[in-house]
Image (tube, rainbow, N blue to C red):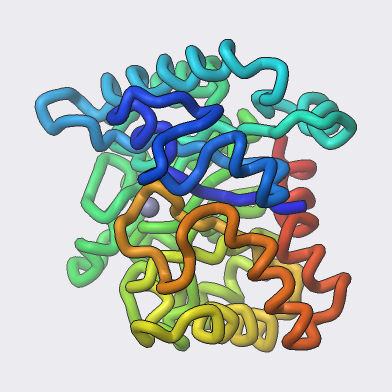
Length: 310
Ligand SMILES: [Zn+2]
């Protein structure tokens, strides 16, 4: 059983006007292939990437509308997770679970009420920034200016804690990262980031950041984008280097998956789509990873955070 912290499938399906149940062959993920791959819960991001002519908030709401339309059509096989109760319902049924997230706090347009509006339409996690600067903080593309959380960003963190939303620190510049860890009363996740010690990329986490997330009892979702894994052509072996490194550093309680499916044209060589998961598991087994560790990485660590936060 797999829980995956991040995909951009809603945007992709919206752009291709395809169904979440069975989308186009060029996509990485749909409900049919989730079943095949053993993915039980998928986080679906609303990423405002439709058109720069529309405000980020409007784009997120359009994608939210599209998700809800798809959700209504697939109620027999899909359950939106908005509470601990609905999480348990999913776990006790044959249905797949969907957790709705927003990628990029610019959708709030500096207004805390928009966070609550998103919560009311089912959003349970917010990636505070994308790569750029927004009203909350700087993204990794602004790293050199050293900007951290703004006053509004602090308000957002506190309100997310109060509402029981999952704070996501993938994409945020380092200063803001540490501000979030200091202020948040709850565990935080980095939904789709890897180890910078293994692959030196600004989207990845330093060892100190990984330790920081572990100290907060959060989880890091392993990303399958080739640029964040490093060593082009390194294949599965290179992916496992990130797993080895993070487990060596902080143990096996803080790692999960956050594929970034449908958010990239540049997946690691050998990964075609979501159906890769069984292969990853058997690869870890061959590498003598303990069953308990594999189960933690595949789902139990994420489940712990969901149970605690929702
Ligand atoms: Zn992303």
